[in-house]
Image (tube, chains in turn blue, purple):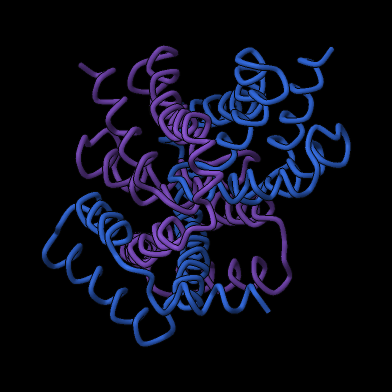
Length: 189
Length: 176
């Protein structure tokens, strides 16, 4: 019974969440805290903070961890399957069908029209990341960081992985800096 | 060999992308299009479009599909495992340590530091898409579709699925 509940909770959160994992967070919260009461609000936000501190997709980190907490290793597997499988299935089926007809002029028209839309979606996402960069570093530093990483990655074509690893090391060895201090001050108020 | 490449192609974005699945999109593109050449930009953009139109996490949809095309069901499983498992294992394994340090400025600094890089990667990707479209269907069509989709997505808060659906219908009728 417990496993069925775990499955249902993450199946619903996965199948109703649009816009990738981060947008399904409120749905997961609704299932885990409100409906099944596996965690209280505080535990859930701890869990979320932890997930955000680590790299990679957030939906599967939440599902895996909560599944594990509620139902052990099997719970973890059930929660992951419920989050991942239904939408991967849909994805494979749709794209395979699309590929079969890809020489039809109307299918080519469809894929042409979709490109600018994806461009806009990615642009919106870019802006969100820029805004969050700004709120942690302030405008001046953000512009320097953004321009700097652009120059390193595009004209100099340094692999993003190298840049990211460097920035992670910088964060680990840096003494507490102004931006985090000011953020903590804001929190303390 | 293909399975090992699939594992690496999704392991790296999973372990380096901060900001959830959407933050890994440009890193996946780097691996799948630039490094391994499994897809061209056009195919990648179709995958992102459909992925955005479908519900659920985007990272595993990308991994599952690319893995399936390159290596069947096993490939799909390996790609999903590569993007999901390392960070999940970290989360469960480091839980007690992280609980203690999750408010530490250093841990917060980590994801803050990585954000501008992800922003630039996403921005470049957005530019690539718009430029490709400009070359493919010309400035006017690109401008109109981009403007309309921006308007509906941001100002009318229309569901991305409907915006994509609208673009598909428009394309089938007028760009075929």
